[in-house]
Image (cartoon, rainbow over all chains, first blue to last red; front, side, top):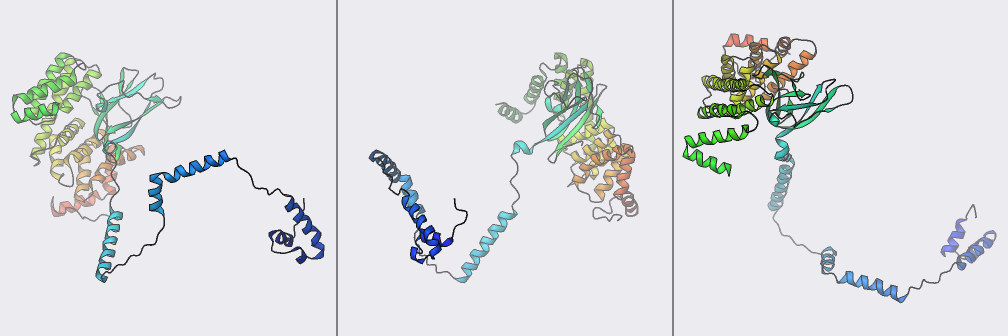
Length: 212
Length: 225
């Protein structure tokens, strides 16, 4: 393979130069290049009539499709001449209306979240209960059902956790350890439950869950 | 279908509504509490409904007692106490000039009474809770502060200072969290509330109100830099 290639040989192959235009020292190289190019088989590829017929049938079918014809009609560029006779105030009025519409569009508040998500917030419950075999959270949000919201161990260090979607409002709750011990959340405010124990309180607002 | 029957009952008025309340309570408590508790709670709920009190907290209290395995007589007693607190909250809010307190305000008032607020304090807070402040919200904040351990009078003082200095409702909502932050740093609940009040210029506001009278400087008050 040649390491270097004189640009004039390429120009010869491109037809920009003739062999006579080349300097004597390049002519042998030019002749060799022309010989190699000529040796390449340039015979056109012959397709079988059956293949040709199949391709043409597919093309004709595409061309016959009404949808494609309509699309072609719609998409084909054509010259359109518009002649508008407007008064200057109409131009300014239109521009102002467009600007007002744009301003209105930009100043609109973002679309509110779907109501199903607007009225709930995700609240994470965490309890440190080493040695517990199961922990659940029960409260006004799940009819005090101690099987409805089990916590899962977060690792092996006795921390149990779960995240619940709670509706907006104030909720009282307690943790149930091993199905029998009701424990108030040490991280939340608590009130007397009327039965000699304490209930924790969490409030869910539109801004999310909070201790209030 | 249930809503239609409820509407018809409301249109008819009187006893049918009571019957529906009893049915609703019975359905909610079925299988959750012993039958004698369900019957007693139905009666308490009917009475509460007749006095315009919300019955959902009563049902919840009964369900809670059943879930916790509390003896029947104590469940009934707890529901009666809660009904009495709702009634007490309604009276206090009416004394504050709120003739038709919302169910949420009544529940918050009862929550406040459970947390240690007196009926007088519920009334006082109702008086200062004029728009944009919602009595349900202010009472809930005060109750939560009390539940955190802030002495009720200290919590009320802090809230009244904030309301009078024109702080928004959202600032009130943040108070319990801010008290908890102070407690996490080693302060008692009372000290944390005291610190918040001082940081917000509460003492200055107090002095100003002492000079100008109780309702002299609503909103726009300046605070210490």
